[in-house]
Length: 261
Image (cartoon, rainbow, N blue to C red; front, side, top):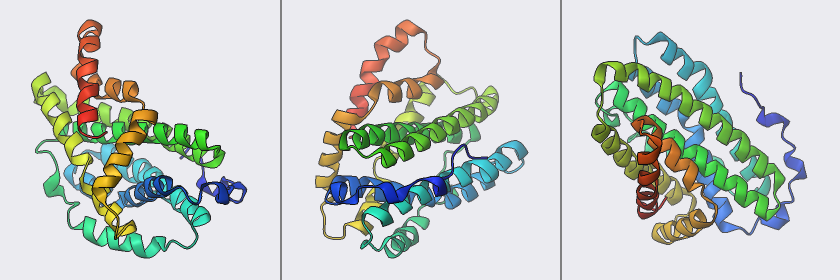
């Protein structure tokens, strides 16, 4: 069972006037809500890909998907509280219709270990994004969003740990080299930077510039993003000794910044 319940959050205590003009906050939270609440599509594809692996398939259906969807519902409720004039349902439906055509099993890595490694990269991105959102919310003096972001981030770290266990299981057979692992991580980072985010942005900001948004996100990340945490999570599958890890960390951080993360 989930460790928290979004229905118990006191949304009525949010001081909406203080943040309702914050465009970047609206964009970040809305995009995140779209992606999180679409987890039923991701779960369906993953369950098909891991058919026969009863433990993994059951965990995806009974724990991962419900927790991910709760994230989306918590953020959706937040948006509807702070920005009640925004037609979330219509914008989301348009996003889902477009993104569903791309969210297919054909987009997966070719093997089970490789796909779980890609999932670990995704969970690295989400857990650290919500850490950044928590920092931003605290700076804005918005405790409700800060708490939501913390709850979600903790869930995403747990999901990362579970995906790592599945990765280890399948990698006992596949025995991916460090070179293989590095290529998969880098490729997934590039994909995560463009696909669902750009589609979501389009459906909440029909007339806005996505390139300008990416510049704003780079600035946001420079101030709030926990690069150290992200780098450590990305390097974990490589099993480097502490000296090599230390020498590699700055290179990975620079790569993240080049990718706009």
